[in-house]
Length: 344
Image (cartoon, rainbow, N blue to C red):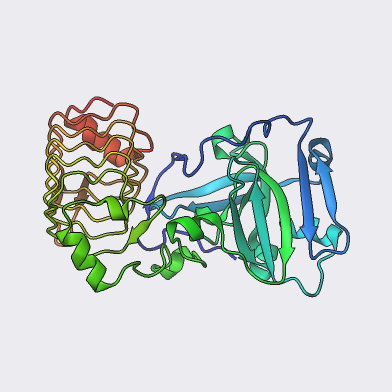
């Protein structure tokens, strides 16, 4: 089911970056209270305690993992069993067309897959590279569907529900991630752009960004190349997969903003505040980050240096940049920052 190698736009790492939630809901780690439920359009609903799950016939599977933010971890060794084996025990109704997975997290986040895909490719997993899953990666039990971006795999699994009609998952609803999420398609990270040209013009001319700062309002795929905002307060904006190449963001407050997968090549960010920002998959190559504060940022697959198609090396200026408690840097970018004297 899964193809091997690097899909378009991905970077290989041997790390296992933490993505999404960092911890489950209260009580989710109490294995005495653990219950995995299989419900919905099944003939025999199942409920498994942790000891019953562990008694199942587990085996290993080696897969490639591809995160929507741009990193891939090849040849990852999983321990668990195919979802298809549990669904066979439950007896899938002929009316079922989709599978919904729900997590034991504070917001009960979820994801869904077509039934035929889940039967062919989804595993329940409790160990990674021979060791029990870390809490931040879904201990005690998660799903992995390697033929799809990693947001289609769910941490802290508690409920599997068979459905006749699809229900879009948390990341698709709240972050405009693509409903299918096939890494090999090359264009299934996000849905299409989220605002029309008139609203884009209003955004570019705005003296206050408060109207776009509503909870979880995602501005997706905007052309903001060369953007010079009239207000320097861009805090908590969600500018995902946007083109901000060459933008003048010097001294801007981007605290808590989400700039994941955005193009910030050559942007002026001198002295900018980006504390707590999500920069996963963002391209900062050639940007001026002198004196910028990137404390507590998420940096998995973030690029500070890259090589253009013509061989030109684009390096961010990082004199005096602060990266306290930043997380997720991949190996090559970490090496570049260390070579420039950045304290990691």
